[in-house]
Length: 118
Image (cartoon, rainbow, N blue to C red; front, side):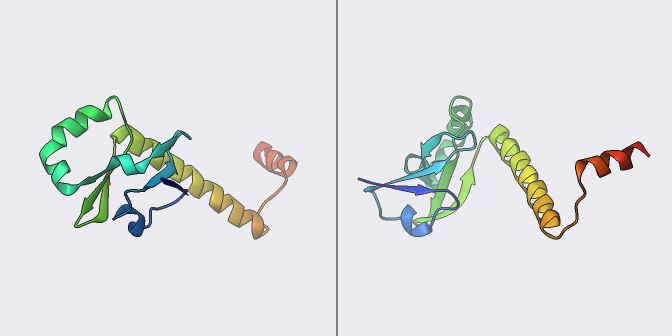
């Protein structure tokens, strides 16, 4: 079995027809999880929705839903989704700060604090 480490997005060609590939990615809390174990066809979602909701209470890892062999959606625990959204908001703020810094739109800490005192 071959292991593929993915940090962002999952190429659809890895999701179909590769039973001998273990797909790993970073989970929101830094642990590594195997996504291959969490890929399910849409019929599983249709027939097991209540069970999926109960399972999230003990295992909040997202489930990838496929349709006709292609990844179409991700089902995830609302708490994990909210954490992910908070993380994305912070990353956007960091990216904006880096962009402004690179454009020279910054001041040193002393100047900022002096401005705040006025």
